[in-house]
Image (cartoon, rainbow, N blue to C red; front, side, top):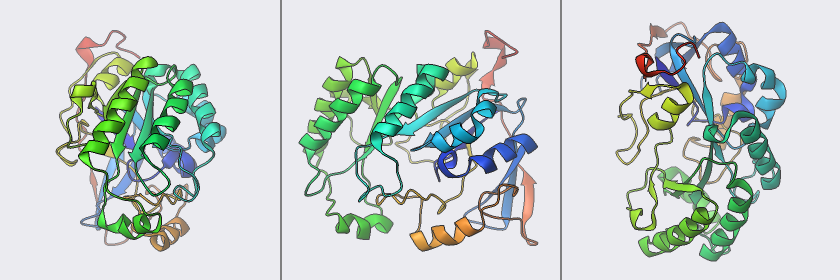
Length: 317
């Protein structure tokens, strides 16, 4: 069985929930190979093949409003990687108000349980007006509200990919020194501990264990095992960076389709390309913001078991 990621590449709950639930209804999805575009994988979305669905989002509210009942009746377990950061519309122009999103987070936690809720405060960035004290203040305020409802908080520090450098210059975003990283980490760790909130980093090279901060597995074997009631046997996802602790999954999203417009985004090539791709969005298409072409070769994806059913407490759950 398999873990489905929805998605590192775009915000499916915010923008494409109609498409997602149509795919779940039809029990399959097609995903194009970004490096060899004529190669298309067919992934079956059936309860005998899918162990767990991982949602990555900054705004699940549209999905909850449109498909809340379907979410509650999904045939397989799920959890949320929910990013809430205190930046304004100059940095995250399409992201809703932070207070509104914290209310949504709390409501989800109350309904589905704390173990299914991971709060992401990432990426951490510094500018002329956003300094370390600003982050420490905002994190303390947010942890005070979310600490009782989040099972974990995952942090990361901005990566200066070439594609984001022009946007970073516009907001005068600068590189963060290792000393600054450690200062922020120490302060965040103390705040998190005061709210009994486990803090971990996402794909960071720097070791922050001296502050009690471990390395996260965002797609986490332990969490998935707990949610599924068994032991997750999946190994490290070799397609991710070596610092990434995630186990193997299949991502069903598409790059250059997210409409949040975050200036630090690595998943969008540019806004013009996003606009073109969004024009191709169709809830009935088996492929996100795309369609099957005559030259495409569709191959059924091999789906490996990730949960040891012999260890499941509830074999039929």
